[in-house]
Image (cartoon, rainbow, N blue to C red; front, side, top):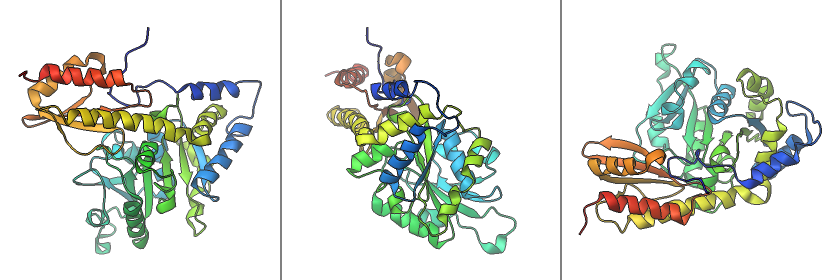
Length: 355
């Protein structure tokens, strides 16, 4: 009997069979530990082919650790990070950036979850206020954002230019980078490091792996390559060094090889688009914004939103009460099926007035 699927989060989906096969393939005999294995070496080559010949990739264990370790490599503890108020870094990683990296987060209000140079500029401190303020060293953006919106290459480049012009670096939380790139019809690099991102947190958990993420340093050869120097030690000190790294590397390599990342992300994106298309025909439910990746936000009257969430049972989605309106987040996964979409539509119709 098939286990039920829902739209709570793409973290809830199982692993793609290719990931299980990839781990099984490196589960023979003994191999070097802590990254001294053939599969991690193979991943290095795949990462350079994807992100550029000077790129360096470091397999990690989880998303929060990946983000925090990346920021630790980019800034000193007395400095600050500019990000959106809605950034995962700010609202979903407890106080880890502050507690572990010692960095102050400067959250910006945004209309759609995305920073612009103009918005980020509002958080620049006056040097006359030093040493009483935390000077921003990093601009951090999420691709796709927590609101499901996607940065275009031009928008990334504009933020990178702004950051570099002001002596800062650009970090990208790429938890859903694959979904963003697939939605734009471009490569991973063009949606990140190829347009000025200095350090990328490359997400994999939300796109079919069992576990594992990575930090990717662009390594442009103009001084930023030094960011990766010593990161192997910093990774260990951030509790992110896997002793049997080949099992992480095998999954990341499987994603990069033959663009499996794109195939899985497109499945999730198409499912989200199908939900959005269906909602557009239902009176009493509105799309809160266009669907650009694999996240759908729908709005309906609060009591009906609560009734819908209750109908979802164990797959209850996130619900944000906004006065008399309930905003519901639905997240499609690589394994979302048409029957799952039909069930969501049926549940919505159930809580809406008939006739």
